[in-house]
Image (cartoon, rainbow, N blue to C red; front, side, top):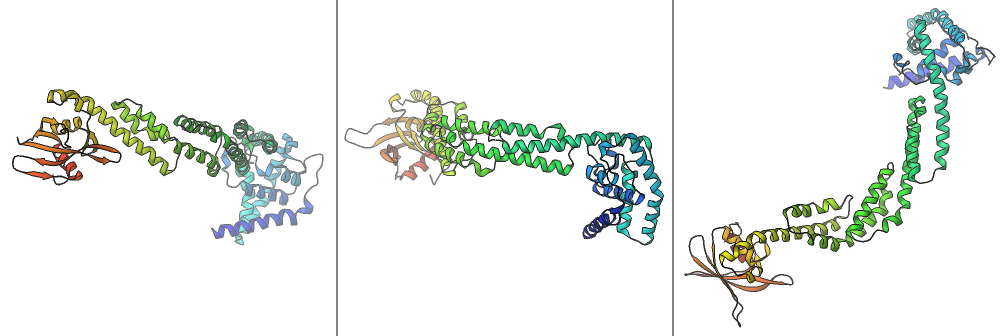
Length: 451
């Protein structure tokens, strides 16, 4: 890599020396007709032209829209006295003849440079041949004529491209931040007249277009701050705010992330204030298997953009709570139909009960333990002056078990029945709340705790 860089620098020095020092006095001034320079100047022109385009495959010019650097105005005017568009067919025939006439001298110079092992000079001289024979195909008249014809088209196209770039950049500077202008910039970039720019010019101009598009897009987002804040603090407002941003984004090009800070603030503000409305909507959904799936996906479906994790946790908590209650309702629909056959009166179905999963009902508890092979025998309310409720079961092993229960505040603000003592014919065991949950889990066939 270091050798390549060093060589490139030396080549540039040689080019400058040849063109601007040794031959400056020999370059013809602008005249009414094209005048062919001497072989030294012609070969210098060819070498410089080749170096500027040496990375291009020589067989692409009949398909390419690239104007070769050797035919650009500055170099053509300096060397031949006229710009490319002022040349006639006869002038190009003269150029070919002159280049062919100069080739023997060029070949001699290459051999001399090879004998002296002057690699830099060899590169320069071979570059001249690369342009005349490699690119222009001077030795093949028909191909040469086709290349010149294509270059004439490219010259006209290049002028159009250059003028269009200047026009577009002037328009860009006058543009205001509107979605219409964003679309216009996108349309500008697709203008086919830009296809005649060089790769460097094309990259540079398209980068300018993208830069203006990004700037105007960012300004539009900043200007939309009041719109972001205008949505109601409800789930519906939350959806509409996100839909507005989605639509806005489609109309814009890339936007620097920090420009969305007003949107992010509005989103989090509305989201944190809409948890109650979200819970209300979920609670209004009937308990069906389809709605359980709908509730499970509700948070992901609601938020299309990132919100603060603390806010997201509040929504997930609501979802979890509603899914539990829905599943209970679904279980009730199946379970409660069988309770009359078991002998539990309907008025006791929804008696609040602490189960192994937490808050439940007496009816659901009896269904759970019955599915595990236990049989419900009877349930008795507390006596007028008593506080103990009684549930009698026949265990899977055929042993009659009596469970004494009391109302406790197992969940803050809610009283429910929980077993406090278990009796059979030969023993009596007192239970804590967690002990009761472990025991019920065992009765229902769920392995939990020591019971």
